[in-house]
Image (cartoon, rainbow, N blue to C red; front, side, top):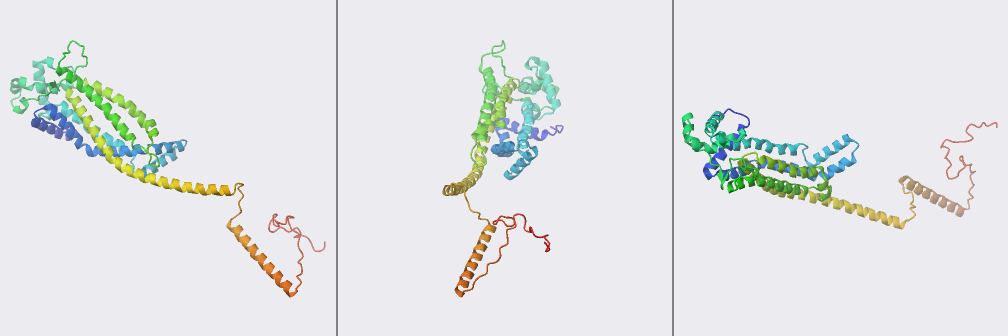
Length: 413
């Protein structure tokens, strides 16, 4: 039947046909819902993989990010530039992890409508027909419906066979498939009913139907605690420093770890509260989806962990090679310090060495000339030595190369 098109129909209509086909195939709504939750996670696997990869990349850079924040604590511009350079070097998108994480949530929200509105999406009736069916059953048995009209369609879908004649009279074009309704029974539990929280209330009956419905939200909340705990542990295992070594201290004390600790208890508590305000089918869907996500997360973490372990091994090898070079340099420096404890070193600059070599050559030439003159009997006249301009023989030009005390002296004096 034609439905007014909405953007969410791109998701809800195909998945509605999928859930209906699974229900017809298995003849059990609970089994169909379990298979449906698993298949939804399989369909979302490429997006989940993208999100997981981005989150793991960000997690493993946590020690290096904290180091940048410490080094540039007083300069926000340098800090931002250093982080951008780090992300560019590691191939990490600053907003990629968050974006890919939100896409599955945006897809899962309309999927709840598939479970919540079985007449529209499983029996493929228009909203007007669904409301007409609800009105017929509600007028005949108002006690069947709780105060929350949000889940009236699930209640009505389970009681359609009981009011088939009245519905056929009111809607002559209704199909036999719709009049069969949907059997929400799953191992004696009515998945179309909202579980009772007050086990000591007057309306509570100690039977398996109520106990089973009571346990489903508890199991859903418990699975979320286990899921978040496992995911946090696996994410912390990829946090490595600049040398590629796992940094457990940073993993435990990071801001993300503190946030996850709070969320580990807040989300299950919210799930538990919601579980006792919605039909059991939604809690069962949430439970199976959580278990499937945990398995997916474990598999994806192991897969990407192999890739990042290989990268960390290369980083560790480079760091060890650099440490070896530094250790060798320090050994040489230590040997030099031991050989010269006083720290006295000769000036070995290039200019100094050239000057010393030139002076040695000049001295050798002078000695050879003197020896030759002695052999020939030549008496060398001593040149008149001019007094040093500065008064310091070793530094004759310390007052300047052009300094001459007699420069402006007249010849008459």
